[in-house]
Image (cartoon, rainbow, N blue to C red; front, side, top):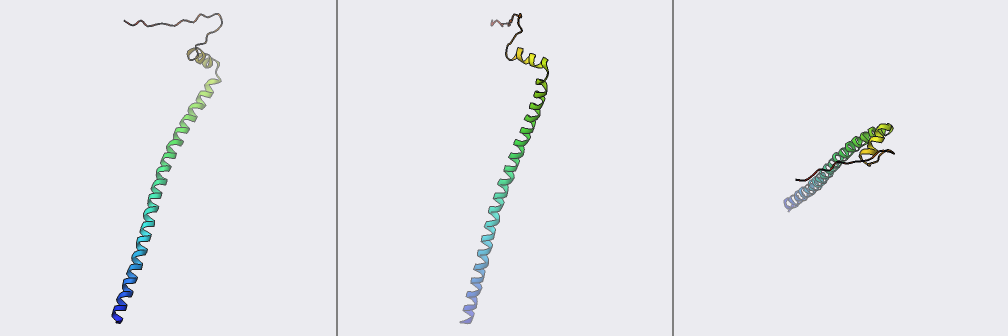
Length: 97
């Protein structure tokens, strides 16, 4: 009888240890998934930051150009189609053959 009780206690001990192993394994796996997601988010954030820095540099350069009167005139003529008083605007038309 004592031998059977001893075996039952051993099985209970194995079951308890197995449950702990399963629990901690599941916690470790879920934490790894979470860390992978955080790493992916970090990579995406770094990419967005790099793009924002490039755009910022381009905007700073454009702002420096906007202090130049000749550049403002060039933009007004090319992009807005503006002319000075007394000038006659013209445009070339391509013929389709």
